[in-house]
Image 1 (tube, rainbow, N blue to C red):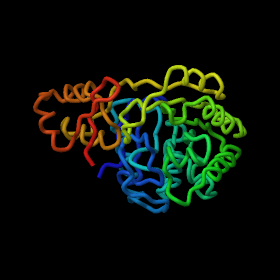
Image 2: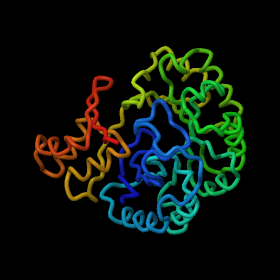
Image 3: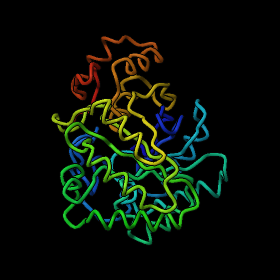
Image 4: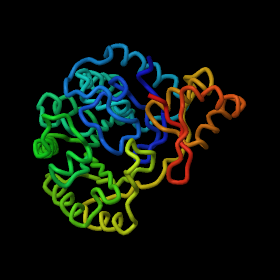
Amino acid sequence: MSYVFGPVPSRRLGNSLGINLTPLKTCNYSCIYCQLGKTTNFTNKRMEYFPTEEIIEELKHSIEHSELSIDYITFVGDGEPTLHNGIGKIINWIRKNYKDEFKIAVVTNGSLLYDKKVRNELLNADLILPSIDASDEKKFRLINRPIFNIEYEKIIEGLRIFAKEFKGEIWIEIMLMKDINDSKEDIEKIAEIIKSIDPLPNKVFINTPVRPPVEKWVGIPSKKSLNYAEKIIPNAVSISYREEGEFDVSRYKNSLEAILDITEKHPLRLEQVEKIISHFEENTKDVLNALANFIRIVEYDNQKYLIKKN
């Protein structure tokens, strides 16, 4: 089992060494725009999904053998990372052993920030990236499709409390989608939610579904909506573009192994797959044929994406 992946190119974090803390699609949300497919382990239970000590050992090995520079060590991956009850221990281990050599980021849906224990476990990170996609409870249910006992106002209040406690940076991410949450009214309501967080988040990323979403009816909003969001949302930054850069595949024996592992966490454009195959000096046609039983190719936004079959 591989718990650590990358470094991979990130639109927000440069070269990001990712840590995956949960089995595939273990989450308390089942977002309509998720690039990894529908949630299969729908839970709000915090537990040690993978052995924490094994994650630390693999992380240590990955740091020591990475062929690319590392900008951030990022908790992200196959589900909601704060569901793993060892996240605080791993963050503290990184801080103790590497001081400020790497920045530590946690990409989270923010659903558990109402829990004081979770907030305390994240305090040693440098950067927390929670999501706010909805303007109200109704849109929250439509977009994020949370497990039944999660309330939107409780999540927002948890984020407000955490913002006062946390000494690092908070970057909010908003996923705007056509005819779902991109109306003038929705954007204005989301802007008011952001303004209610004190201190204000350092950045608010306006994202769009640049990779194939789980629901085919989810679409990319108009330029007009994006421009309006950037105008009225505090500290807004658009990331509605595809990531560029190299993937570190030095840990893999061949391109087949690399592509299968990466696509479990990160859909790959065909051009990215071809670069990985070229790195191993293998035949593109042969590799794609070998992938056929494990990968599906999806056309989205004028690009071909390779996605791991569930």
